[in-house]
Image (tube, rainbow over all chains, first blue to last red; front, top):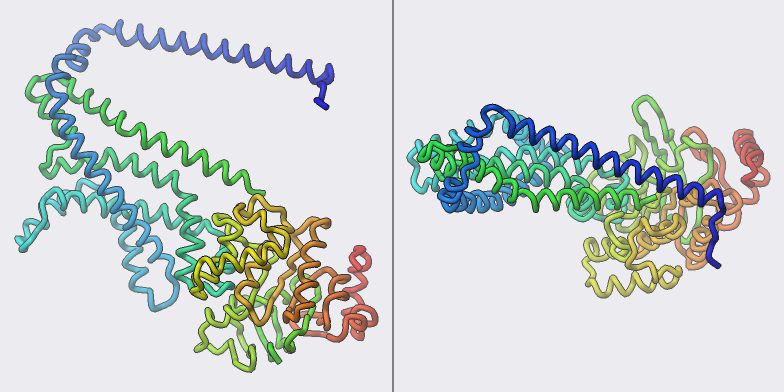
Length: 279
Length: 246
């Protein structure tokens, strides 16, 4: 038997529908008003023609696009390498910080000192130290400046990610460890099979968010010499005395970030749903 | 004696939880621990499972002192199963993975064999259809039965049950108690902390009343629950009857 709604319920449904239509109309009108005001405000500004010329010149954009794309390829490669390395380093440090007992005091102290100092130290200074300081030692087999710069980024981001992982580990209820230990699992096994999988799932959204930030910061390696997308754009700006290459690089960065941001939102949504599914 | 606790003391800060408690459990015996909240029932079970260190006394399993700091706690826990009030299933694993985790990782059994054994158990308790489900899809009673199976696949010598029905809706209590009754029939040695006096009467060989961190009196259920010797026991049971739980 299909349920037949009462007149009272039908009245409620009709009311809600009227309200919904009203709010859609309101949103459409206010969007149109704000959009028009913005367009008029920007294009009607006294200096708009000059800004358009020096920031949105299609010819200049086309001329420098290949060089900027070349640079972007370097950004992408660095991003993949640095993200993987920084995530591993962060996880390792976070686990080391949870170790209890006097035997592990030095390990814990080093891990704690590391997260404190490298979260405070500006990335630019770390890059200079690594890229110019280490080669200055004139040791045999000093790696390329690209590797050194990458290492600087990994070490800095690893400190942030370690704290995110640690927050995740501490959010897993102690009763989960008790349950695992009561089954005879060792501390390591309990960590590996019970605590870490839950911790990583919980902090996946902030981890991915930091990865989006990392995507922009890998460009700072250009301070040490390698030509990334932003440095390529800067060269273009200097050649043509026109700022358009920066806009091109900016748009490319946004496009590059879109998939990652999309994944972050999806993972966040899924995590929220899973948590609501319980109880 | 399979389990023997002698003068066990446990202190949290200034708070004395176990104050020289002694208790013996013979093989195949089922002991019900009763007593008010805070009388030390759960703490005793956690001490026996070595989840908390004791502050004095000794606990022996099969004549070997397990509270000896030189003993390997992981090895001891493999012989003692513990089931918690709040089930504590691993939420990121399916029912089957929850059960096979220890057999595969701790006892190094082949995965296929561990899975077969787990499925046999799940069929026995009528949960085979839930093998692939995650714990949050199960009712409290189903979760608790999975938790008991998870402890049993390790073939423990001793099973500790910590108020395993206290978090359950009344109509789900029965299915868990039935399972415990069957385990008794198979000769499993069990120590259970419980608020279910009727059940303690049915299933326990001996009831121990804990008060202020000691066993104040113990004996056959009819005697301790029906005709207690101590005034404190009578007072406690009086309150239980008042609440309609006996």
